[in-house]
Length: 93
Image (cartoon, rainbow, N blue to C red; front, side):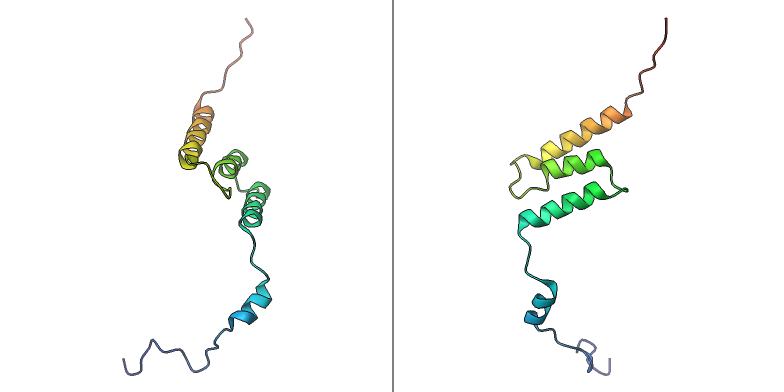
């Protein structure tokens, strides 16, 4: 290495945190942020609606239950079992 490659280039711009804050806006509260994540998940056509519901109910909360991960896992397993079960075949008999 001829020149310290870790140095910032001469044309680098130092960001002033007050400028960045003014452009971005005030920080969101956790409630607002998590509500936005939930809304985005539910609005996405690529997201499984049942899985989004499980995530929203168990994990995307400001004060999750002490067993939130275990409860979410149980709900996901139950959903998987339900979906893996063969469809009931009706016979007219």
